[in-house]
Length: 302
DNA sequence: AGGACGTCTGTGATTACCTCA
DNA sequence: TGTGAGGTAATCACAGACGTC
Image 1 (tube, rainbow, N blue to C red):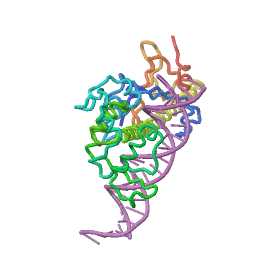
Image 2: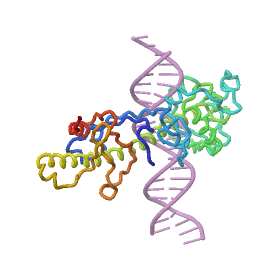
Image 3: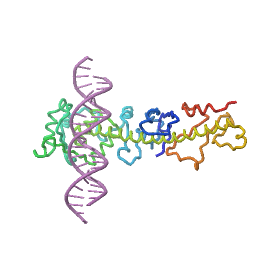
């Protein structure tokens, strides 16, 4: 995967010290300032950082990412084809809330304990549901038995589709979805909770991997620039040598503003960058980073 | 080939805690 | 300020896939 920093909407600044060669995730945090909030307008649709649009990632999670924050500000879209989620729950809905078995599921869920929320909301109804829908014998319902429900493919597909639209559900949507799928609203709620949690986890992993590569790339560039600085300083101290040498650096001068530019180094002499980074534009405002600041100090102005 | 097994992974569910109206 | 609803984080427990013998 190759990302452009601007495309990702990332604000990444590094302040490498001389000892920045030792890069590991733990000490990266001390020198990295990150702003990982994706900008909807700046993100390409193919970027995994773009959680607003359907990505082409192979994993199911990757194909439908949205942050909850993103979804909260999204324009409302037609949701749950054929279901009017805005209608008030009917008596039937209330019955659904009370508990519906899952006809498509391989097994209904049962838990040793009930959440406080369920107890306060509709505990007795859930109790009824649990007894009626699990389809288990008394032996199977032994102490702490926690048989797992497995949602059918259809149910999962509908949930996925819904998650693409809204990563969070309001009560009406939850009821409607539960009714449509023949699940308890609590099950839908749990599914969305888990989905959000695991989406976030995966996204964090992706972000971490990307930043790691950014860090490695910038470290390499920093090393190269430090080397150039040393070469320039050496030249400054021995002008006679300078007269007999071809410029050992990769620096060139901009003819218009007479500032020093850094063309990309020849590929044969440098390690290929693992991450496609935005090219540093020396004609733009100086970068507020240590190495670049000191580099700027070497620039000559007329 | 196929069955028993151990391990890994995905996922439904629970619990504790936090935030906010 | 107390309370309930709804969120996240951490975790548990199970089912199924998979590799190995």
